[in-house]
Image (cartoon, rainbow, N blue to C red; front, side, top):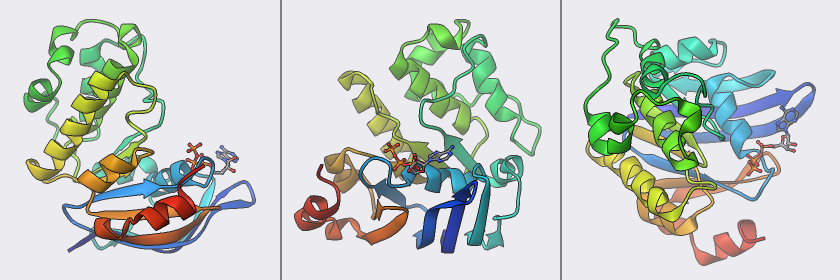
Length: 233
Ligand SMILES: Nc1ncnc2c1ncn2[C@@H]1O[C@H](COP(=O)(O)OP(=O)(O)OP(=O)(O)O)[C@@H](O)[C@H]1O
């Protein structure tokens, strides 16, 4: 079943159409990688899905419901978890407070932190009472992922989660993403510069260039030719 579907989507900052005529379909349970060189609109596409650009037109269906005119908070409550580029952990809040904040998007009133988050990222349990701002970049990324998961999303949207993070934590985060998908059934959209990871982990990919989708397909179709034409610098 289709979980997310964009049809002729346009999205604007002011009057500039940064996303132009984008259409794609994502099936429930998939990992979709959004690829493309710098500045082509990957972050803006994710923001458009969350309702964080100035204006957007076209179709955007989540679980069969048109969400394009819904507020960001409503989209979160419907089950879309978002981890922005740069993580946006609240520095003065503790790790516990940052995660509990995620639970406020839950509609069932449950404010408990799911135990599996600590099994996935044990460091967060050790640092529950530390301030978010005192964590390393990699730990903050883990915290941002835990916060988004605390709302029990159906789909998780991650914007370059391994950017600028030390290699051992990159591996932990990549394993967590695959675990969340394979074992917990969470559908995932990820902006990723790491082509080997995209090839290994994702089911489907879209390549963007100048605000448009220029290639899309299943992972086998992410050929060296596509990489060379659209993704090398
Ligand atoms: N808040 C904003 N206001 C106006 N223009 C913006 C804004 N954010 C991004 N843009 C412009 O939109 C275009 C796409 O940017 P976007 O950040 O979506 O690209 P990206 O593919 O995610 O790039 P990167 O890989 O560098 O993060 C760029 O030309 C950028 O300058």
